[in-house]
Amino acid sequence: MKKNIDLMIASVFIIYYFYLRLFFGGISFDEIFLIFGIVLIIYHKIKEKINRKLYRFLKLSFTTLLTVFLILESVFIFYPKRNIKDDCDYLIVLGAAVKNNTPSLTLKGRLDSTIEYINKTNDDCYIVVSGGKGSGENVSEAFAMKEYLINNGINRNIIIEENMSKNTYENFKFSKKMIENHSKKEIQDLNIKVVTTDFHAFRSSILAKKNRFTSATFYTSKSKASFVPVYYIREFFAFTKMLILW
Picture 1: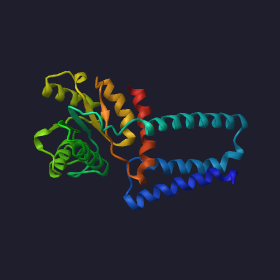
Picture 2: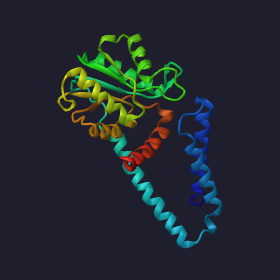
Picture 3: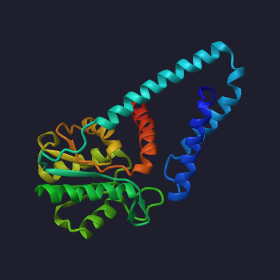
Picture 4: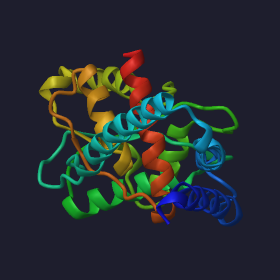
């Protein structure tokens, strides 16, 4: 059993990949599970032939990487992300993909959480929908978000469109400019609530602080259960990339 544990894990990875492809048409980054599965199968075939010193090096490298991975994933999971107690002056909804003119499942979750927050708290705040027009999108993410909110009962007069950003850092950078111009106050003097997806909260908090959002709190949407493995593994790589670039 122990001897074939790598094959068992490989099978789980490959089955999960085809499950996402068959039932959901695939989602971004799901190929990583197919790659992991193939690598484990190759490893199983050649592990008896690997030099002992090389085997120890690979084992140490894998153990180190796994430890770092588990620590970061724990931070992603347990970072505070459902703050409903603190009022806000502005609520920022971070963009995600738009399919034609319609918010993707991820973006719809963020918008539904925005509506839920407003209805639960009756918070008297402005809503900044943040996201530009990406590849394959007919309209900006901000426009699609605004239309969705209006169609679901949110007053159009409290919605501010930020439609230039291409990533999370720019979401905060450009939203900051719009909020300061609108409020005539410095961003650090305002209470900001950020709506994103649960896995994205910790990285977003770091990027928010880089843009001087010192009092930002989060109210996140919950990831669809079937997508949790992809989302959280993808976030590990996105977080690593952020550390390298920033």
